[in-house]
Image (tube, rainbow, N blue to C red):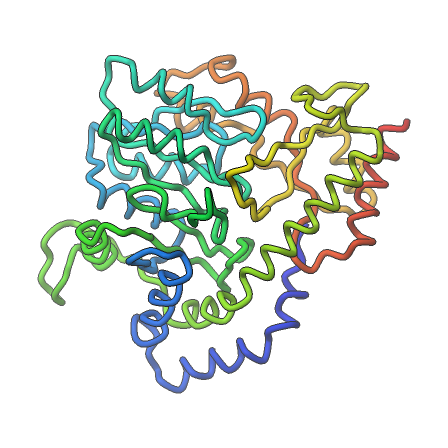
Length: 379
């Protein structure tokens, strides 16, 4: 699925120099490396402020809390995403409200969100998830925000460098949240995250919350948390930030190659959203407004679990993102959802399969993956 050693081999000298710089200065928490990364990442995104924190999960919580999400509030998000999208809402004391997805992209469906906003219970915020590296329909969500007076908090954990109408993910709502987990497109050598915003009041609130609710040492204005991006991770991220555009373009080229080979294989029926014995592989759609960076390359697959086992036998890595939609997770049973409530999310959980995707993936390896898929369905 992912070979991080290939990336490291190309940048190991620069990384070693960056780590040595931190060890020489002995600034491990805060200091010049973090300050520089926050400036450089903000400049890259085209946003006023980028604030490092301990993880992508913390970034989501910090953005929500700083935007005013409080106990008793309701926040709408996708049912088909990583658990942190919802757990960050509960960490604020708020209630996640799950909406179904667009079957073509697997991103949060604005029409489903609009139906929920028209209901009798008020909503404080909406959290669109830029799933697999493609921005959700931010035109529609911006309209909903204006009509209903709600905050849009972007879950951009998988989307550093993605854009919508040439505007970067993380700059399209009131705030954005990024993850730098080691598997991400822009990745640290451990956990890390960031909150991006043009709202200086929100940014100042994030600064306090990530530092125990304090602006001045030992003086605490509110209950915060210890959520800091350490200097070693910031130094590594500064090196990788210099390469992120090239790496994202390489991912796009690999995705285009997958698309072409799968279509040529005869396994795909153009425009079909349903997989079956006649068209066993379904390709997700890329919106023309979106610059997709392919954090993951995901297809729909007929007999998905059997196909995955077949590929595993041939030493081809795959992953399922995500096998259980959030509204059916045991931890959210008290919310009262049941199977059948969000059918597109449930169908995606049965059919989605992520194929190997990283910038250094070779063309012969892509060909081998597609050939193995074709072999499975030829039986």
